[in-house]
Image 1 (cartoon, helix red, strand yellow):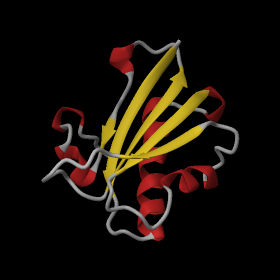
Image 2 (tube, one colour; image 1 turned 90 degrees about the vertical axis):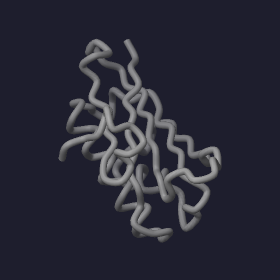
Image 3 (cartoon, rainbow, N blue to C red; image 1 turned 180 degrees about the vertical axis):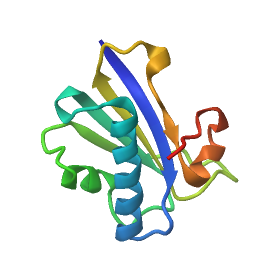
Image 4 (cartoon, rainbow, N blue to C red; image 1 turned 60 degrees about the horizontal axis):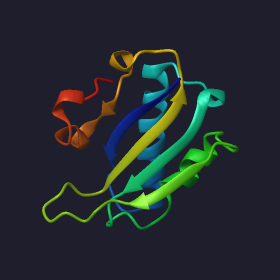
Length: 121
């Protein structure tokens, strides 16, 4: 069975370092909270707000060892007044866990997007 695991985080700045740091932090915690192994991942979909242009978050994911996992990056819809510097990740993972046991993770300022899913680190 495949489940989607969602998460979001805000980068501290529009720099390669900040984008990579935020992406890695979010992904590490998503993996840990959901017992995700790389071999169980079907695909990862990543979005970033239009103000994050210094580099692709997917490059940070590749550097973490996901060399053969299909990745896709896209730009979020530019909604006026929306939270800025947001990176969102959707991991499609093969798991036997029921939907109510999947732990979605919205951390830092991104917890404002889904207060009901705000993650504790």
